[in-house]
Image (cartoon, one colour):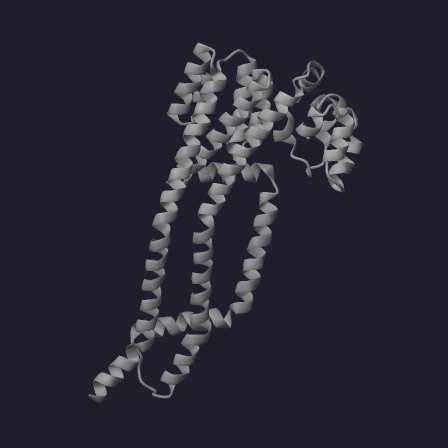
Length: 332
């Protein structure tokens, strides 16, 4: 879109040309006033469907008309593109770090279910012909297998019901906030989630301030752009305090959510008039910290999961073959 803008095409024509097709194009045509103010929230953009990224793309927003009229629209788009690239890169790294452990865990569960549903019953039939008392470990394993096989339909129904309940429960914004708050309190994972949310908040706020958005308006947008809704709700409170005259650093400290290093850097930024630079530094610092932590986690979890699954399968096989060992010993 920015390249079209550089060739002096009218903004309305540029948007219709680059907005894509289908639902997205229909949105632009349904809200033509938004084009005149560059995604201006005051003229209908807030009602736009979710097929377009509302909170991040534009709350360059309320001052968007001035940007367009003054010829600063290109610079605003350039800042937004740079911001989007950085945020997307961090998200991709986080997702990539979790893919292998998730796949390994899923395959391990499938192997365990296969052993319990197919292998154990075959050994049970084999040992049944001997009519001898089996070792305790073997009896426990067979009992677990029978329990799972006899109640498999109920277990499937329970799993589906749990999934449906979770989906319905998470549709409530209040429940999402509670879940995200619980994630922040988890040992290890909570620290990473806090750092990631802080990075999102700091980078979004810095980008908006760099685009000429007033602090209060930028805080409103940054709060909605944070993925963790508990942090987002805290930013809403911070926004209200800043609107009432409280400094940003003090308002953030009162929430007791953000790391100390972020609070100190924000204080320094406010005192020196370099808030945007300090926020970008905070975001870069925590992005690097999150990436390092996830990399270490991935390197640790891969061999750890392999060892755990190897031990579990070894114990299952030992329980299955223990009667054979006892029979061989008795025959000897």
